[in-house]
Length: 339
Ligand SMILES: Nc1ncnc2c1ncn2[C@@H]1O[C@H](COP(=O)(O)OP(=O)(O)OP(=O)(O)O)[C@@H](O)[C@H]1O
Ligand SMILES: [Mg+2]
Image (cartoon, rainbow, N blue to C red; front, top):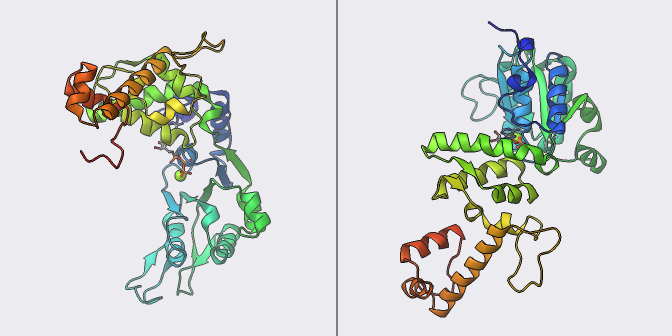
């Protein structure tokens, strides 16, 4: 049996990939607060790994042998959420056929993860505040006071201060939750993590899909680094999964990238053939070549009324090659064309 403190930070947070300064700060904060019983508020855009941070806090802390009980406050309708959290007594409402324990009760000795906390109704916010202060509550329809020893970790991708100003989130609850805030940084602010994440996801998807990918062309990484990643790590994960599925070769190339990554990455990846000279900031050869190829394919299809056999003849490629390229470039016939 090893002790947690004998492991390096890298090993301890093995499932949270990242080596950037911003992620190192997150790891260090997790280390400092995981053993404390204080409430933590994990904040950050969608897809940045807030749930992973919450899990790390639980599984690296003193409560690791207790349960980790997640509740998505945004996904459960208001009335149900109350009985989900607090439980209910038999007969408390029409469908309460038997007594049921709530998540706070189930989390005894462990951690409750309240995800999307801003979505909680004003009525429940009051009840939550009381629970946080007293660690005691009653089941819906019950009178017996239940004691449960749980830690609360909450998460939000909203601007809670703004919600407080608007009056949709209680200020007193906000202060209760925000004892230790942890910011989960957006992916565009930790470019240096992209390569690590890409390799991590390639391993994950090649294992699950029994495919072999030996590497990634440097231009692909350039595109990935320049993209703004509105969906953060979740979006990157999906992009890599898609590339692993679609790639025809062992090495991922720009042709495997979804269109939005070629367009949304600064516009300087590609240059037109009519340019006088290469711009000082440079461009990515393979992206430009792919752009040119796409234009020629579209031209051939337009000229042949989208008859693929004829377009393939014009381009001197096999029909199957053409179809493959259409798939890669996500080229589909305009709705007016009846194929
Ligand atoms: N640093 C990371 N290393 C490895 N995987 C990550 C990392 N960050 C996020 N992921 C993966 O990205 C996906 C989204 O992460 P997660 O669900 O934790 O995000 P979130 O911040 O809770 O998003 P949302 O606000 O939409 O709920 C998950 O599949 C998660 O495993
Ligand atoms: Mg989440």
